[in-house]
Length: 88
Image (cartoon, rainbow, N blue to C red; front, side, top):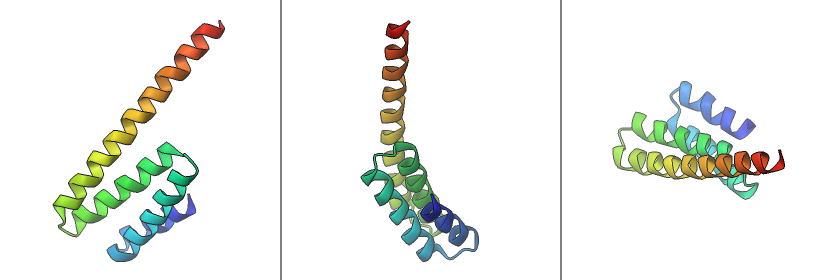
């Protein structure tokens, strides 16, 4: 989470190259640790940074990736709810 926070700091100070570096680190770590929400946050941070740089192609790619992760999160939530229902 601190990598993500560094990305946020650099984004809001308009130091976009450093923001991308920290968002990428955040996303890599989150993916390694299988933290989908944190991975999605980093990807959205990268999308916003690419947008701020005027790189709409990469921004769109990152948003599509974030949507895929959101779908995975939703599927996991449904699975968890089903498992809870079966326990009752």
